[in-house]
Structures are given as C-alpha cells and as structure tokens.
Length: 355
Ligand SMILES: [Zn+2]
Image (cartoon, rainbow, N blue to C red; front, side):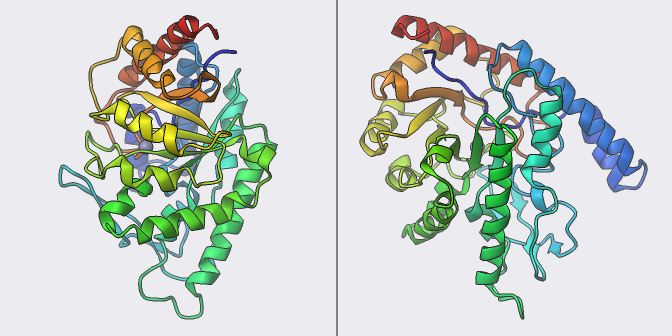
C-alpha cells in the first residue's frame, strides 16, 4: 500500500485562456471560441498532470471562473455586490449576491468532470464548493417571497445531486472546498458562524452513506490568492475540533506553510476520528521556491509520527489559482511543485515500508 497523494484542484490558466476570457467579456470572440480554448487548456493540464506521475488528477479548474462560483456563472438572478472577502495584502474578492428566487445551479461540477474524463488516463478527482460558502449568496435582507430556508433547501438539493452524479460517473473522490472555515473565526470570533457552517455542511454530508463518504473529503486552508491569504492569522486550534466533526472520510489540510507544523499535527492526532484520512499539505503553494523531493519526504515522515500511515495522504496546501484571473503563479511552477510532491511522497513511503 502506497501513501495516496492528490492535488487540491486549480492550476494557473494559460495566458491564452485568460486573454480569451477577457475577449469574450468584451464581445470580441464568440462563446464557442472561449469553450474551445477552455477545452484545450483542460487537455493540456491533464497531460502535464499525468507527466508528473500523479495517480489522481484534476482538470486544473481551467473552465471555472473561480472555485466558489462555478455553478452559478451566467445565472441571471445573481448580482456582483455580495459579501466581501478581504485578504491580508488589502485586496478584496467580492462574493456575488442572490437577487431573486428560485435558485438552481447552472453548471454543476459533474459537467466539468465529464470533460476531464475524456482526456484522462488515470482517475479524476472533482472539487465542489461547500454549502457554507454558497450560503453567503443569500443577502442579509430577505428576498420577498423567497426565504433563506427556501434557498438553503434548494442549495442542498443541488449540491447533493452534484456530488451523487460525480460519484456515479466515477470520480476518484469528491472534495468539498471549505476555505471559509478558518475565515469564519476571523469574521466571528465567538465561533457561532463556524458552528453554523459545520451544521449546514453536515446536513449535506448526512445525505450520503458511510460507504459514499469514504470518497468524500473536505479541504481546509487559509486562502491563497495573489500571493496572499485571508485567515493565516487564525489559529488552527480554533478550527480543528469542529473540523473533524464534519461527516467526511477525507480531509485535505493546508499544513506546509504553518509556522509550527508539529503543534498542528498533535491537534490532528487528538481530534481526528479513526475512520478519517488526513491528506497533509506538503507543498506551500504561496512560496515561489520549488520544494525538493527530500523536503517533501521529511514533511511526510514528520506527519507519520502523528498520523498512522494507513490514515495518511499528501496534498498541496491549496489550489495554485482558485480564481481564474490570478497570474501570481505560473503553470511551470505548479507542475514542478506537484512533481516534487509525488517524488517526495514515494521516498517517504519507501522509508515507512509501504511503497
Ligand atoms: Zn485552499
């Protein structure tokens, strides 16, 4: 048995695709041209992923505008002025807002999965956005005739269908992106917002059987956009006890960039349930320098002191470009780091005698 290694999801888009998206917005190219550019980017991304030796790949989220808003891109009842997400360097990502009911997904994740599976020769993992993130779409002031409860019911139904279809279509795993977990403590230090996020996400997870949940995971991080984070200042100690209450089989944790990894690993050992596998982040996606396989190996061995090898996996700390217009990192850098993750994880597995 080897140590499983999986990416988080996103890869920086090729400059030609970023330009095509701009050209489409200003009406200079047709939607068909944009779709064809996206398709080529997915094909190239998967080929480069496979060249790293990855046993599990993603589509690099090439066709998604962002990890959070992909299912609602193009809906007519969404406007731009929703909840602002402030980053440490001062830039802000504005979340959209629902302007009217009823709510329905436009492009669920299994549509992206099918495209990726056309090009992949190895299993494809699919990232989806969490109920808690999309709960922020509903405005503070209620929408007349369409209550928050109506919205959350519709949202959970869309998300259940999305995950179920991904599993049925053969996704290696489905990863629910929960970057707002750590952020929620910054927004509400009492922890009440985090509690409501955990409860809402469990309402979705409870719709799946124990067997299905083995293929469902949750990603946690402090954000990674334009070389900055949104919640690195929040102590993991405030998140981890609640995080492992989520009824998921796998956890994909940002860890490489933590200032004191051993302290975090001790908490993981304390709060993780026995049936939960933890994929530890061994690649710092915000650092420009590419890790060596030996550094990765040492990070895996360090984690193996706290997590039993059969409950351990490796991953990157976050996606390399969760927002499609983020050009702070290059494709070459992302794939060099992924190659180091694969090679370093194998080195560690050999030392642990499980390769
Ligand atoms: Zn992340």
